Length: 520
Image (spheres, rainbow, N blue to C red):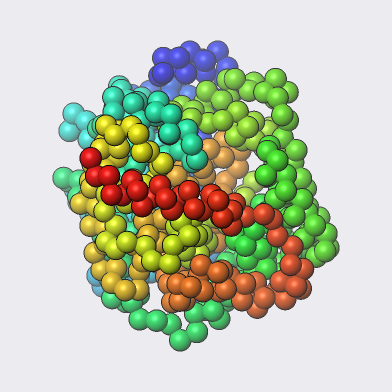
C-alpha cells in the first residue's frame, strides 16, 4: 500500500498536500528528510525539549511554558464557559491549574471545546490528552525505543514499515463489516504495534500507561438548572465560533443541527449555511434544511454531488489518498468518496460547524434497540453487538469480544460511572465517537477544518442530568431549541428518522438479545 501511494503522489505533486492533511506527528526520532514521502515538504519541524513535532502546514500549534513544564496544544480550542477564544490563553489557564494539581487541570480541560490534543512535557515525562470525545485522533506506538504519537496510524506505519494486522485484515474483509458504519473495535488500529487513545482517558509515558480521569466526583452532582446552562453555553459557543472563524454550518432537518442553528440566532449574519447530498436520504435532509433556512430568511446552499465517479476530476487518485489516510479501514463507498472530493474541489468552506456529537445526550442505543433498560455492566459481547451485526462469523466475533475486553481493561471502562452515567451512553461517547466520528472528521480534512460546539465535556455531562425517558424522546433537545429560537421550534420541519422504523428496531433488538446469549 505504501509503495503504491508513494508512486501515485510522486507523479501528482499538486495533490501531495492532501496526504495526512491537518495531521501531526510527535516523536523522539528526528526525521531525516521531510521533503519526500510522507511529508513532501508540506510539514514543518519543531524541536521541543528532546522531542520533535512535525505538523502539516494546514494545522496549528500553540505553546506555553510554566515551571519547566511545556504545554503544546495542536488543533483549535475555545472555552464557552469563560468566553475565551485564544488558544494560548486557554493553555495558560490549564498550566496554572496543573500547578495546583491534575484534578484542577482536568476541570479546566473539561470546559474546552474544539478539536485538539494537549501534550504536557516535564523532563522526560509526557502525558497527552484529547478533546472531549477524541475527535482529534491520537494513535501511539513505540518502535526501536522511539515513541510516536500521531493523528494518523498509517503515518506511523509508513515511517516504521508496519504491516496491517492479519486479524484486522480478516475483519475488514468480512461481509458484515460493510454493513453500517465502518471502524475498528476497542482501542485497535490497523496495526498491531499501534493503539488508539479514547475519550475521557489520558496517556502517560514511559512506559505507555492509559489513565481514566472522567467521570469524577466534581461532575456527579445534578445541576440546579441544566437546561438554562446548556442554552447559555451553546449561545456562547456560537458567539466564539462566529468571531474566531469564517464558519459554515452544515444542516439537516434533524434535531442536532436544529439545536446548532437555534444557538446561532444572534449571529445569523456571521455564518454561511449549506447541505450536500449524494443519496436519496441525504437529499431529503438537504431539502428539509433548505426549507428551514427559507423560513428564517437565511441563504442556504445545497451541493448536489455528481452521481458518477467519472464526473469528478482525479476521483481515483484522491480516493486512494483518502483511503490511505484512514489506514484502509473505512472501506469508503463511492458515494462517500464523491462527496468528500466534490466539497474539496468546491474550495468554498473553511470551517464546518458539525452537530452530531449531540447524540451522546440522546440515548442513542436505547432508540436503536427500542429498549427501556440496557444491560449493566456491558460485557465485551454486548459491546461487540452494539459495534457490528456479526452472528455467523464466530471466529471474528471472538476477536471482537477480545478487543472490547482489552478496551475495558485498558481504559477502566465503568470506573466511577455509578447511576448517573449509563454504560451504553458512555460506550457511545468513548468508543463510537473516538473510533468512528474522529475518522469521519479526518476524511473531510482534505477539504475543510471542522468544529463541533457539543464537543465539550462539561456540556455533555449536563445532558446526563435529564431523565432517561426524556432523553429517549428528545424532550431536552426540543426545549433547548424552543428556548434558543422559538420561531425555529414552531416551524416543525423535520426529516424522516431511520431510528423510528419499527421493523428495523425490532430486528436490531432481536439480534442484540440472541447474539448476547450465544457466547461461543
